[in-house]
Length: 358
Image (tube, rainbow, N blue to C red):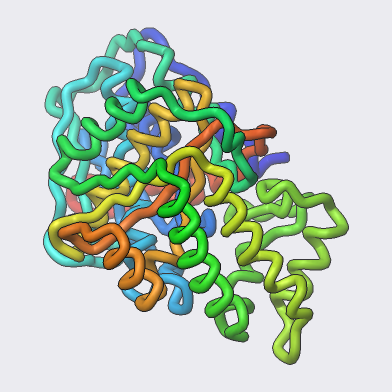
């Protein structure tokens, strides 16, 4: 289907013009994960300056599940990391600048710039990381709890996250993993019974044959067509809902954590948009590293965004910063399909130097 075409992005070789190159880098950026697969980004391409401005599209900062916009900004950080990873794979020199505060589109929140701007480039690529980005997907199902993650992989991911100035706690002991799963269950159980939260989620929970470019098809949760359709209908109700189906969401998340040999909690020194962007970059680096080693990851945002659950997590772990990202990692029992994506044309725009659309 057309809404999955972005995953077929080609790897370029040979002569490429600057505008085509920048659009191509955006093509890698849009493959990044995002909260509820909302893809809350806009990319403004300025060929004359070799710039890609990454902007936060305020229409997709969800008021019920992401009240402060934290998860959306983390998502922008993931997209930036994909652009950076692609640039490095093509041996391009670049820099990027975080903009102050949390501006909304059309103002950028972060600006990526090619250091050597010219009319055309002769591209040669290291294909390994590019292929990893094309293969990466979120796997929310249960993992093989009997198969531990090699310490060398954990050490490598720990190093890359800590090198970005973030605090990382890797939990592998079962009592703490069980406690975290209960905190997540409490968070999910709380929000899923709120009508406005459910209705918001229903807009981004998709039936399996949906042609939408944004959202999470039921099959990415391991659900068949009938079950996915039934759950979407339940989420969209304004009145009473089936408590069993709603509890199933919370149980699935709890069981996923309990099946995982390792849970990673990333904390930032400050709870600010700049820190959220850095956390997003760090997470995407970790996710790509996991993918390259045959491991799967899944993010659990409820425990981050529900205040009481976050406080309980922080007390349990005795960390210094506020937990900003929690994800689990392990060897999945089954692979999950990609989620759909909007195309570069739908989320990107070419800008002339004076700021006008080309």
